[in-house]
Image (tube, rainbow, N blue to C red; front, side):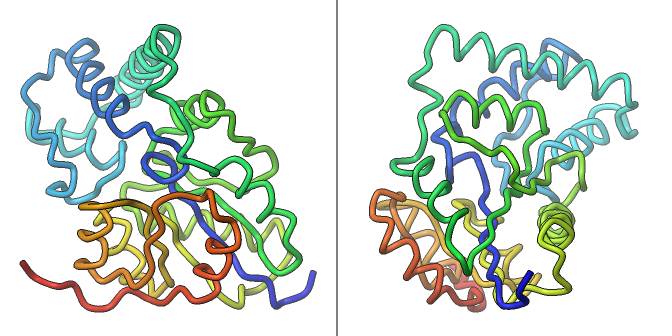
Length: 241
């Protein structure tokens, strides 16, 4: 493979799929059902690591003064995925793609100078369920999940490693992280990756204030997506409110 490939790494919730609210709801319910943990802080940006693994570990530390055991994690994940599945059966509209995401991902995968990957703070099984529900084909795309690290940085780096391996490269010409959360902007800055924000209105404003130079509302305009990916820059120092 040529060494001039660029890598676009997509987040899932709020970036490829419009699942932030159903995900939050099921996550909180599953903690209550699986481990009788209630009244947790749902301001995810306030947690040390905004990932399913990081949040779960933090909640267990606060509630029980220890990390969750493997069996407890399995019980929670199973409960969480079942709840997402039930929600999808009763209200599939909560699992829509962000406009144009499926087509854009497919097209970008075929671009001669771009490679695509997925990096999400979600547990693997919940991530795959949401992609399937939104009819987004992720087959053959390198992907990293909450199982690959507690921090967003570890997860993104795992996605890069997998991509390098898959494309048999030692480096990418450019790496663009694509996400919708403040934590996504911060992670890109820390890793010195370029960044493309996804959001409209107030969300877009928030991303710009956090240092994102380029923000798109959705993927409906493929040409605009590609030009923004090519122009993407590393986020500037965060603007403090």
